[in-house]
Each structure stands twice: as C-alpha cells, then as structure tokens.
Image 1: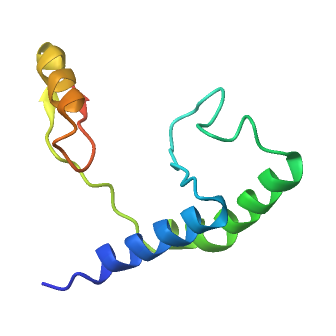
Image 2: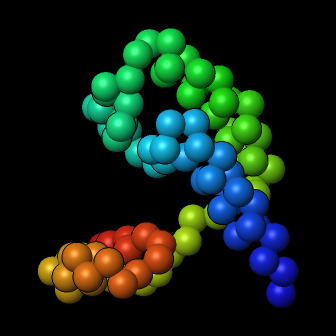
Amino acid sequence: MSNQPQTQNRDLNAKAASWDGRPQTLTLCPSPSPAGLQYRSPENKAVIVREVEENVWPAIVADKVKTVVYKRFPLSEAAEAHQLMETSQHIGKIPLFP
C-alpha cells in the first residue's frame, strides 16, 4: 500500500504552515468565523482564498483528499466520543451518527 496520499497531505500541511507558522483547518461545514482567520488582514485572507482555490479545491474535486475517520460513535455514546477526543490519542475525525 502506498503512502503517497499521506505524504502529499503532510507536504501540503507543511506548506500551509510555512506561510506564517499557523496551519489552517479547512472544513466543509458552515462556520460563522473560520478558525484562525478572524485576526488576519483582508490582504492575507485573499492570499489564503487564492491558494485554496488553486491548490485545495482541485484536489478535493479530483478525490485526492480523504477525511480520516478514527472512530464513529452513535449519538447515544456522545459522552464516550467526547472523552476519546479529549485524550488526543486519536488521529482523524470522531463523527457521531443517529
């Protein structure tokens, strides 16, 4: 099994972090204030948007970006899911389902 997608993601993360040392999280969920962007200048935000449009969205459309799911929990076990999240022992998302 190739680790090329993981390597590509790590390289993209490193490139994003190298700009000012603060990597950004791209979420497909609506958010009133995307994490880390509220304190940036409009010029800096424009650079980030342009980079996302040029580098991230094409990878998503080409199905090169995958969400890593660590463990799924039924909504009835939300407390257990939250406990796991607080341990920081996971890599990936911990989604809840009905």
